[in-house]
Amino acid sequence: MADNENNVSVDGLREEIRSPVKTVVQKLAADLADNIESITVVGSALTDDFLPGKSDINLVLVLGKRDLKSLNRLAAAARSLAKLKVATPVIMTAEYIERSRDVFAIEFLDFQLTHQTILGTDPFAKLQFEKGNVRLQCERELKATLVRLRQSYIASGANRMVMRDVLISTIAGLIPLMRAMLWLYDTERPARAEETLVRAAGKFEVKPDVLIEVLGWRRRRGRLESSHMQANFEMVYAIVDKLARIVDEIEVS
Image (cartoon, rainbow, N blue to C red; front, side, top):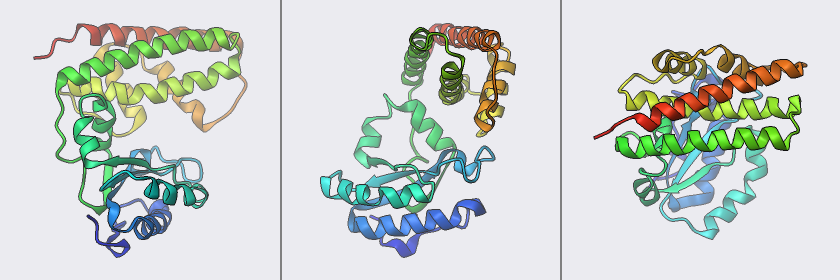
């Protein structure tokens, strides 16, 4: 297990997040004492997708055991974490990670691609995955996305502002799926979101323009005409449908 809060190493992090991460990690290391095995920063905080003041910092905490005492201590720290733009940490144990490589392969692949362990031993670097598990999860997630898109469109009454948020969420969820599909084809996976969309679009022969446009909506708010929103919805739906069909036909040994 990690010794104590003095072992925190934030030198490799981007300057904007070093101070809040060190503050949070030292507190968590002290509060969780000998139950904490590692703390790892994952996601956009490590890439140029990070927007200071807007993006959250995401952490994965690996504990020696999951117990209510530890959860209560984390709950007590929730408000101070939020003030520092640190999202509620993802809590795992080493056993959970090992037993979940088959069902959460996409998430772990993304953690493995973009992570930095700042306390304790890296829990992701040596993980290995079966292509069959990754393919199945991609298929399930893509087909579930199609269902959510249909349901959201109906439930919203085709409201353009509601669908704007739905499409943003859809593209955000599509990015790790596209990375996983690239992995299935032994193709290099970019860490940045837009680069992922462009590379996957080229590999799977879809147009990236609408995906990049919707992704850009996260950075700005503006009025969208209903016709434009509907056109984007149709294009996004068609792209997800095509990706689902491609994954459905992938043969893995």
